[in-house]
Every structure is written in C-alpha cells, then in structure tokens.
Amino acid sequence: MLLLSMALAGDILLSMDEETIIGGENYKATWARMFPVGDGTWHFFRAAGGGYQHHFVDSDGITLLDNGIELTGRTDLVDHAISLCPDGSFLHVASTNSQPNANDGAWAFRYDADLNKVAEYQIASADTDRQYNDAPAVCTGVVDGTLFTYSDVHPDAADYASFDVLGNDAVVSETIQINSQPNTSGSSMLWENESQTLLLVRAWTVGPKLVVDRYDADMNLVGQPQEVQITDSDQDLYWPQSMLRIDSYYFLAFMEREATGREWSTDTGNVWVAVFDLDFNLIERQQVTDYQPEDGSDVTIGAMQPWLARQGDSLLVIYDRSVQPTLTRIEVDPDLDDQQNPIVDTSDPGTDNTQPVADAGGNFNAAVGETIVLDGSASYDDDGDELTYSWSVVGVPDGSAVSNANLINPETITTSFVADVEGIYRVELTVADARAQATDTVVITVGDVAEGCQGCAGAGAIPGAALVLTGLLAVSRRR
Image 1 (tube, rainbow, N blue to C red):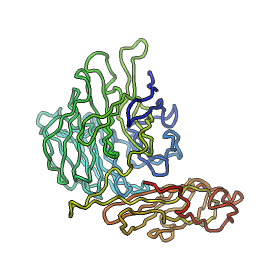
Image 2 (cartoon, rainbow, N blue to C red):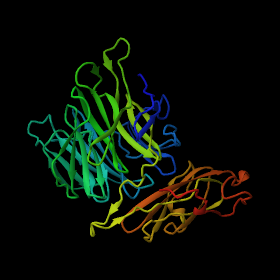
Image 3 (cartoon, rainbow, N blue to C red):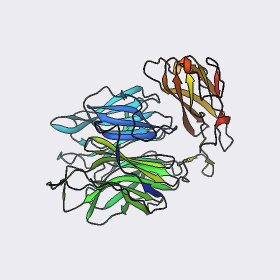
Image 4 (tube, rainbow, N blue to C red):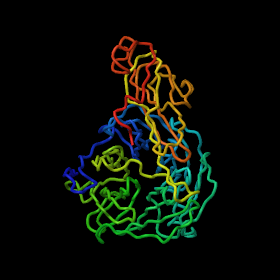
C-alpha cells in the first residue's frame, strides 16, 4: 500500500498521519469501532471469533490497555453496529449467519456504562425477507433502534427498509416501514437535537451519490430525500457507515472505488472522509487510503467498515485492512465545539438548553489501601441549572474487587473508595440538568504501599490518608 502522509490543505482537516495497526501486527479483528472515554483514552470494540469484544485503548489509539472482555457470549455473529447512548451505555446489533442463508437473522444487546450485558434479544432467525448485514444502529433516548433493508435475493420480499424500535430490554417494540428506495445496508444514522430529527445517510447501490433522509421521532419522513453527489461519475460511493456532528459540520467516513477498471477483492476499496455544512454542501473531502494491486496481481485488497471517533483535535479514522483493525489520525481544527448537539426544549421552541460540563478532576497516582476521594465540584452548567451527580466504576485492574457497590455516596458531588490492588482504576462522573447530561472520567494509577501516593494530591501526602481531588486542580474548564 502507498501511504498517504501529505499535509492537508483544508481549514478543518489540517494534517494526516500514516496509518497504524491497532494492537500490533498479530492482532486480528474486524468491525473495529471506537468512542472517546473522556480522559484521552478510547473505548475500542472489535469482532473476533463470532462474538464482540471491548478494550480500553491508550490516547494514541493503538495501544491496548487491557486483555479485553467478551460482551455477547455468542460465537455466531457476523456484522456489527454499536451506538453510544446518552447515559454512557451502549446499544449493539449484530447479524447472524446460519448457513446456507447468509445474514438471515440478528440479535440486539444492551450494555451498561460498565460494559456489563444487561439485556439481549433475538430479533430474527432464518428470515429471508430482510437483509440483516451492515445494519446501522442508533441510541438517543428519543429514538433507539436499528435499520434493516429488504432482501434482494428473495423473490417475494417486500422492497422496503424497516426500522426496528428497541426498548431498554433490547426487545423490538415496533417495526416501522420507512422507505422503498435503494438498499440501506452500510448506512449511518445521527439524531439532531435542534430539529428533533433523525438523519439517515445511505448510498445508492452503485454510483457517485449519497442520499440523505430525515425522519421525526416517530420515523415519519420529513421532506424529500436529498441526493448529494460528491465525486466523479465514474466512481462508486458505498458504506457511509459513520457520521459525526461537530460544531456546524457533518463528518462522514465512506468507501470509494473506480466503477470500472481494476478488480477489487469482494467489497473493499479506499477510505475517504468528507466534511459538509448543515445543508450537506461539501466543504472538504480527503482520501485516507490509497491501496494499489500487489506485484503480479490484478486484485486490490482495500479497507472495509470505516468509522470515525473524535477527541480534542484528533479525528480517528478506523477501518479494517483485511482482518487487521487499522487507524489513521487526522488533526482537525481544535476550535471546533465539542458540544455538538445542544438539547432543545420542545415544549418551548424558543428556549435552548446548553449541555452541562462534567469535570471529574485530573488523573493522579495513589497507593494500595488508600481511601481515594473524588470531587466533581468543577463541573458546571452555563445556564445555571441545578446539577445531579452520579459516579460509576468503569475500569479496574485484574484481581480488583472494586465495583460500584464500593463507592461511598456515588450520587453526590464527591465519592470515595479504597484501592485494593495495584493497577489502573477508571471512575466516571455523569452530571445532568433537567434535559441534558455529560460525562468525564478520572484515571487513578495505584502502586504498592511503599511507593505511597507520589505525584497525586500533593507533596508529602501521607499513605493511607484520604486523597481529596478537587476541581480547583483543573487547569481549565473542559468544554
């Protein structure tokens, strides 16, 4: 592969690093997905062995911080979609492959913020009327569900896509017919708080166009589908599988390849990123990969399943190169507002609500046996709304028995726990006003008693004493 490492010329996409394999050369996976944790590290999900796994990954996006956990307990899953919910939990939908009928069924899973499986439901099994592969999922608190397209191999299947509404128990509460247009596999969905609409971005089966649909909370089509052509007519766009709203822009990752010419391996191609304004006018576009045929071969092995995750000025473009999870980091304008979707009070259309800011304090060191006190008093709300606080343990080292049950007063502005083994502990703070919430995570690195709490609450801290991490230590308020 010829790596693209040139500087970018855009005002939003500033520069691009060379691609890197997540987890190292011998690490294998598909359906790689990332979400920011909030402390600079990342949630990393991957498909392996017919199940789905989770790791925490360092700020570089490539270094695994743990051995990972299996989430589903299943071995028959094929394609995956996962969505981060407003409360920090996750909605996961995966297709199944019961041969000889590929992708003829699906499961839905719910995980809490600690990555515990709290619900599962078999959506379908041995159903040839719909295609369950490459289905998008969305979790918003207003609209939760997944989208399946019609079957193009079953002669009697109805030619419409359907949206399955999923409850907190992962059970399908309603199936809604949404359109009779081209195949919706490999699309992406994004809820817009300002307009209270769900955006669906999909590609034509072949060709250079994207299609944007807008739906209300009941999945009624709002307006007419919008066609967007962003490449030459001799190119095919497909798999626009990840879309982010950042400030007043949409960021979209998708696949592109020549409509004629060289032969590609299955559904591979090159990964691209495009930036649009809120009317879907193209602002910038950038090719991320440039795969070429290997010597002596006419077949090009490309990338698959593109995904986007953003934290600070880092936009991670994640994709599968064969069965190796790979990422390319793009530097973006650091002034873009993280508060990308301000909540709107629908009872009074003229009243906006600013999302609160959670501040769990800075990362620090401690010792085994310390009583560690965490303080969220640096959290704030620009509207002056009263905040509620909720602390949860989201990561502990191997051998630790610390869980949410060990947190003292976890629903107050401060909480505490005792570190029982050496290693890295992660505690997440969620703050909320009446209409919105935000999260932040603090990382505590615990050594043995002999090391004390060097570098934590201050010089001369006494091992065994309470470590009060105040919000006043924050250099600046996170926005």
